[in-house]
Image (cartoon, rainbow, N blue to C red):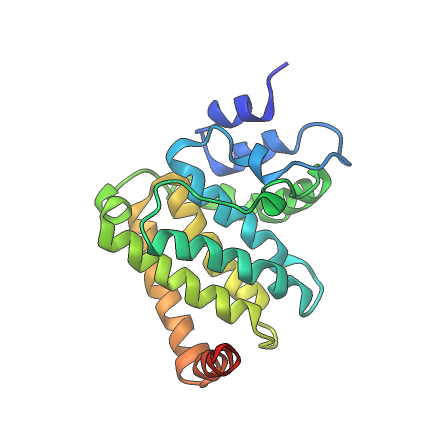
Length: 211
């Protein structure tokens, strides 16, 4: 019987198929992040970001952003500094969603992924692999993660969808989709962060606490 890692290695036929494979098995079983990331090669950061985004779609105000935001910031920081493989604290790596959670999430987004699959494909590798591009992606993810963690009403799903664009671009090696994610992410940061003063206020608050 193939392991989850084996399924991941054979599942480069689309994110939807990968999610469906992970959903097979005992619904109560917890799939650790270490298991989910094993064998994904160049798509490691994409899958980690994908999983980090899951809590953003939980219908629990405040809790979703508090869980998702810090994980997204962690992914963004590692891309920003140019890490080749993601690092996770042990207590995080040994935790993860249950298969039932993945099933619910897969059922929710499968129709959208089905519509997108004929548009998303590997292209414009330079956008994904250039050092400056990777750092820029990381910077946007850090800022979006901070905004997601803040109690801004009615924004969890919005930021969740934006982060899924980044995750899918990394998973499917689609540089054109990453350009779209950059543009949408920059607009969201400008509207909800810079123009509203939310991001600046949060940064100032954190700096005061540090110093």
